[in-house]
Amino acid sequence: ADKEYGEIYIQKEIHLKQFVENLNRQLPSGLSVTGAGEADPGAPALSAVIDAALYQAARPNSRLAPVEQWRKAAKDLLTRSEIIVNRNHRAKKIVGQVNIRPYIYSLTVRVLPAKGATAIDMLLQVGSRGGVSPTVVLQQLADGVRGEKEELWRWQIHRRGLYIYGEELMSPLPEGG
Image 1 (cartoon, one colour):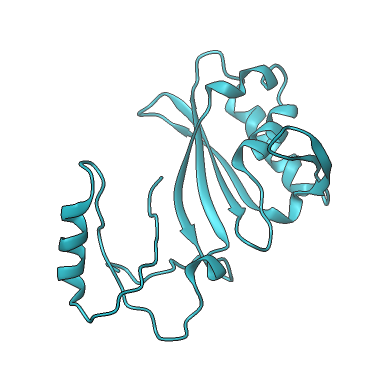
Image 2: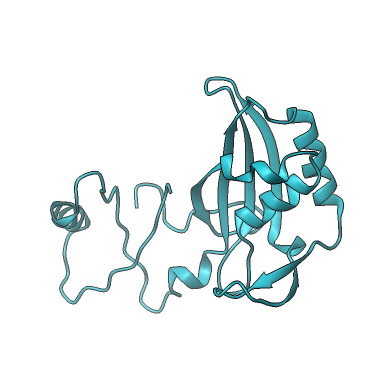
């Protein structure tokens, strides 16, 4: 995943640059903190304000239905007022049904020429007010594309960022923070 966020509460004041350097020295190789910001006292927790995630599902084009079929499936899905799916418990028992349509903000299907792949960008609701997994959305899209239901395992899903959803997408922290 890209653009991960976290909250750390500290007792002593420390310069943000020094904080980042100290933290990075403690992290395993390949993992790093790129910035930090200071929240106002009394500000809500990040988990309370982050309510959208941008996912990219990508798959090589070999043996993949044409991109136009995926675009049509995305358009058809977005025009539906309800998309009812079974909600499963961790033990794989069905515990009810839920309408996931309100949790799908946008779907964009595009070609990644450099990778020879088809990509689906999914802006989805996440968080405490409800949400949907990108895998569930991909399953619904595959239902609209003949022969693709059995091929879902070939897709690679990557979270590109977490956001605050409103009239425009906002990053939870200022640039560089």
